[in-house]
Structures are given as structure tokens and as C-alpha cells.
Length: 184
Figure (cartoon, rainbow, N blue to C red):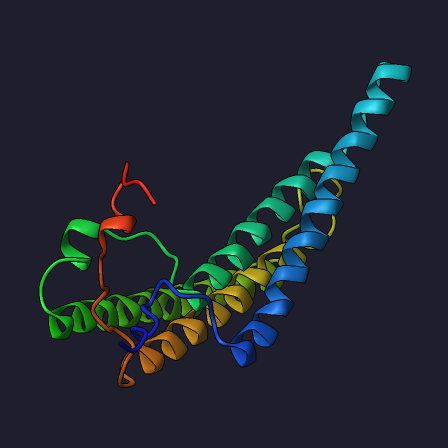
């Protein structure tokens, strides 16, 4: 008996894993920066009863970018949220169509978000908006929204293409050992 082909929940192939290393390292770097900034602020507040004014602004920015980079990674790995009752039921053809429709809708959503956020960046630059905490140009922060949105849209389009390939949705074979509470 041959092994079933990997389902959409299988780990990404090696070539995709190398491409995902960028997002993985960005997440690590962003989390480390966020932890260091927050820890430094806690230490300063503990010892001096004062705090760095810029830490909240930078922390919020880092959390937003972290969410967007994590979202890009989740879309590329096909691990984004879905309603399993609908996406996991039915024939292979139905599951493939729903998965491809989902990937296409994610790509469309983040393309629209990228286009609209370019307008936001343009307004921040044109009206010389500054950040409330440290007074740097606001576009320094808002420029990352269209960049990350384009990355997510491209990842979703890549997922759409991968899901159209033969074998992307092989039916899973469930054995007695796979069921919860089964004895080996």
C-alpha cells in the first residue's frame, strides 16, 4: 500500500521552507525587540519612577508589524483560520474549490488593504503628520502596512497556485490508531 499524498496541513516543502525563513526570522527579531524594549522600560520605571516615553509607541508599532508578518507566514503555510465544518467536509474537489476560493479572497482582501493603505501613507507624508509619542514622521510607521499587505497577498496567490496542483488535497486515510483513545 502506498502512502497517501500530503494534505494541505502537511509541512511546506523544503524550497518553501527556505522562503519562509525570512518571515520566521523577522518574527524572532520583532519579538526580541519587543521584549527588550518592554523589559528596559520596566527596569527604568522600577528604579527611577519614570519611564521611557517612546516605548509604548514603538511597542505598538512592533506588535502591528509582528501580526502582519505572522499573518503572511500563516497564509503561506495554509494555517490561517477557517471553519473546519465547511472546509473539511465533502469531496476532494469541493475542498479544493473552497480552499482556492479562500486563498483568492485573502489575496483580494490584502490587495485592497494595500491600495487603501498607500493612500494613508501618502496623506501622512503630504500633511507631514508626526507621531504623538516621539514626533517622528508618521509615515515611518504606516509605510509597513502596504508592504506587509502586498506580502500577504502574494503569499495567498502562491497558496492559490499550489492548491491547484494535482495531489494538493489527497483524501486522508483514517485508521483505528488515528482515532482518539485508540490503543497502539
